[in-house]
Length: 552
Image (cartoon, rainbow, N blue to C red; front, side, top):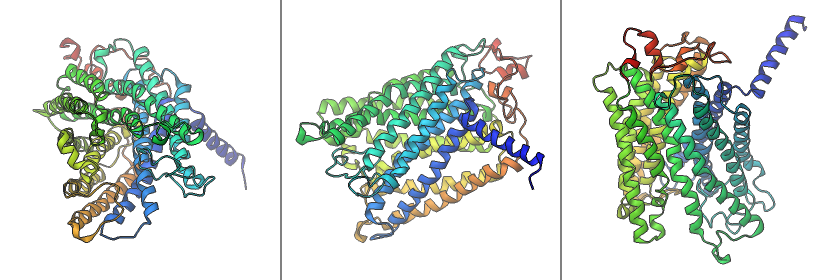
């Protein structure tokens, strides 16, 4: 029987649900972005597991070939556009206003619009499983790979509307990403608290700022290419159709003008997390702050001029090959500077091996490995031999899983107490780290060998006489360890929401402004807007006898 109290409680619950749906608060939008990204991460991870089951043994028919093609297309598209991008947007939304000492993003309604249009785009992509057959009855979900090369996307090879769903959904998620980028830029330039000069910004904010500029420059070419693709498919425009006077290579240029900077759009926030976590857990200021800022800006500029190193096998001129090989090799310099500075920060520090620090140290090792294989692939003759082999698959996953995903885990372990007011379990966190490191290197480390042995990417199955059996089996067993680690991670997040130790405002004894307010922060962030005098305002507050501003 309903009582007045139960009716009132139900009304309060409904109003809280509506508050989340209608919110323009940057923190809630940040949490919603991250939760959406983690949901798609689980879905895309299940697809990856099914792909590895299919490839575990030769002549396997666990998945039908057309289902396999859809799986690797949806896995790649989801991981890049529906996992990496929204989690980055979520971290920026939650942390940038707190770190620059303001109450919200500069354009809160645009912020909410960006989230909802991203989510609509993601749902539209998966709706293709239902709506894909369209007029021609040609199956469901895109099956053309996450970079959708022409002429595979023409109506002759992709009947129905699966490619149309792919293009439309990514145009929508791109609009959401541009809204986030615009908000970050305006917030950082216009809403910094008193005393927060550009060279007192936390490195996290600096790297999110350059990432936002990179998004503004790199995303429009992709959207333009997708609009041209839709014009080809619906109006016969012929941009990518050679029989109509178009060129399939133009699609590759447009896609990779976006596609290679996208790698840095995804990895720069990983750098941002490492630049906050490593100093706090080494108990030292970041080594070479101005050089780290300069290196971030250099990476942004150089990344815009390296796209065609994905196209060495297309048959470009030798001059073009030399230019793009050189520019790709150059980007190793600022990246190497960053690795050197993180190691310099740890050198002589009092390192605490808490879970966020462990994931950052894992990131350093894995990202160094990916950088070395990246240098190898930038050398034209080497790339000609291993282009479109599993060596490239291994390199790519070492960048985005070993680089970005490890730092996303570090970020969640580091800032979860700020978001929820509760600590994650360190014991489960360390189990998560070690099992995931083992599984990750088993899965992707041996794929370098498979690539050298000649196994092409996107292959459905293979014969027993190729020498690939053992390595594929090891690679697939590694997925089991990764799956166990992810289950531990999900359990830790959910159980700590209720049972986790209370965090307090500053559980890590950190130095940036987000730790100056309560955990979780109130809707207005700060009772009084802060004023800063150095790059480590909380250090100044805790150590008035030896503040940083005396030495900067």
